[in-house]
Length: 161
Image (cartoon, rainbow, N blue to C red; front, side, top):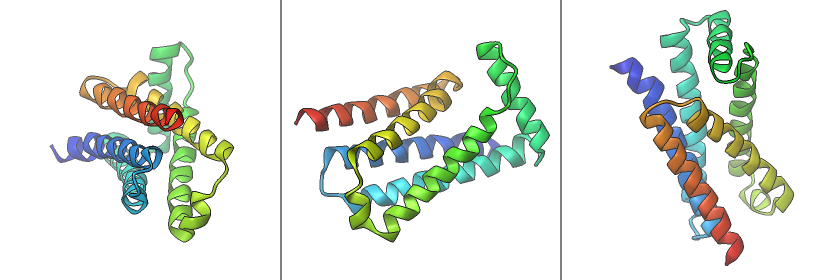
């Protein structure tokens, strides 16, 4: 029970935090502090998820994690490749770095260029589409679909108005 809550609950909560933070950010509701807290919570929950997966599923074995990732990738693509694990590491680092940048200088963060904001959004969408929809199963896929839909809708609505 604890293992399932730690593994699945943490990533579901991280996904929710991401979508809620993006909603607040793109809807420009004047709640930047809440969005930043949710963004940071999402990054932290992603770390909790990674630690839980390594502890409960891979028993602290990098080789086991690589093989598991390669098997999942092969099941969906036919390519036995574990490199997605390193993509996940990089994404976790990016999210933590971005959250830290937002706390370190909120005014500068708010003035980032549109291309840099769009690139960050594209990376997050890529990761959440793959992790939350393509590779997810059962209720986790529903969470991923809703989160991605909310983020896209908020972004499209912000561009329209």
